[in-house]
Image (cartoon, rainbow, N blue to C red; front, side, top):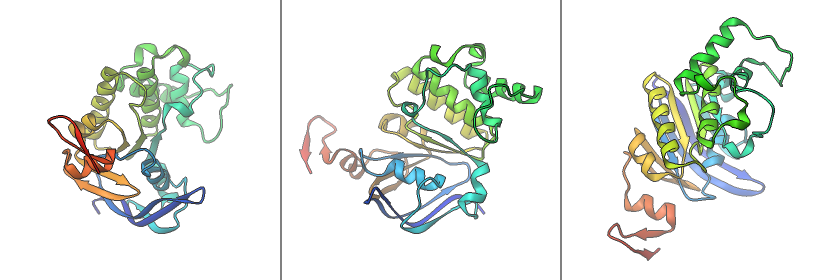
Length: 245
C-alpha cells in the first residue's frame, strides 16, 4: 500500500459551525504536501482531524490503512509556536527529550544515554546542537520552531505534520525551516504542513492542496488562478492589481 493518509468524504464541525465539507484526499508515502487556504478556510481543522484531535461529522480517515488510534505512534506533530509557553524553565536538549516520556513532565527523570544521544542527533539535523544547554527562552523565533521540529523527529515518525511552521518568523528563518523539512522528506518521512507562505509552498512541495472549507485544488505545486482566488477571495492580476471576485 502506497497511501500514508487516506481521507474520504470528511466533514468536520467546530463549535457548531461546519469547518470543512466532504473532503477526500490521498497522501502517499514519501510526499511533501503543503496545505494552503484562506484564514478560516479549515486548514488547521483538517490537520486536527487527521491527528485524531477532532471527531468528524462524517467520513473517515486511515493512516497506512489502519485507524488513527493505532497509527498515532507513527505520526509526529509540530504545533504553532503561539500555543507554547516559551518562558518555561527548560533547556533545549531537555525539551527534545520530553518526546521520550510516556505522559506529563518529570523534573527528576534520568534519561538514558541512548535517549540523550538521540536528542543530540536530531538537534544536529536542525542546526541546534551547539545550543543544547540553552534555555528555550533564549532562542529566536526561528530557532524555537526548529527545536519543535527536532522534538517531533526524536520520536522517529513516518509522518510529520506541521501547523504554520513559518508563522511570525523572518524570511531567512522560514527558508531554513523548509530546507530542513525537505531534507527530512528526502530521508523517507512523509511531510504534511499547513502554511500561508505561497512562495515557499510552491518551491518546496511535491504536491499542493488548497482547502477553503472544501477541497479547491490538489495537484502540482504551481500558482493557478483557482488557487489565488481561493486564497484571497479575488483574482490577482500577476502584472499588478486585481479584480474583485
